[in-house]
Length: 200
Image (cartoon, rainbow, N blue to C red; front, side):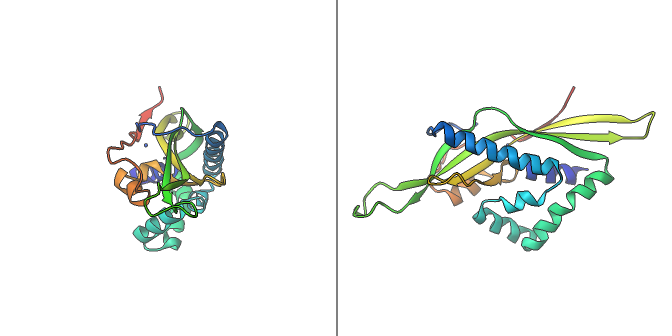
């Protein structure tokens, strides 16, 4: 059961100090994209988590798992393992205001000197999520149902020229991981806690 919950946290996502502000439409677009991903997870389409992963991060995850095919197989098997353990995801919701960063120093504008300020051409938002996991134990009339809320976040990344979002799951990433991808992030960055709590 622990391995199943760990995989769910990988799919569903963990305070940062807000470094900048993004236009409302950018924030709304990121939230909508995370909501869409959450709906796919509820429907059992766990492969959506791989398909929408930030490309550089997907390469790292695939390497850790021994290849992209093995990563996809692991996620595809979650549904069956959950069913065997009497578990089901009943909802994935965004909750709270995202934290915003401008990242990825791009090339200076044409004609700018070597000492020109870098161009940050990507948005990085931390979008808080709550995933509800239902666990059923025993059989009627002694069936016990326990709901667990998994609090986490998705790291949503998009080029500023587009709102085409890709993701890194908050439960699987560290500050050093993010800074290795986006060197402009502050060294004293703090990530939110990923936690589980039983719904009373």
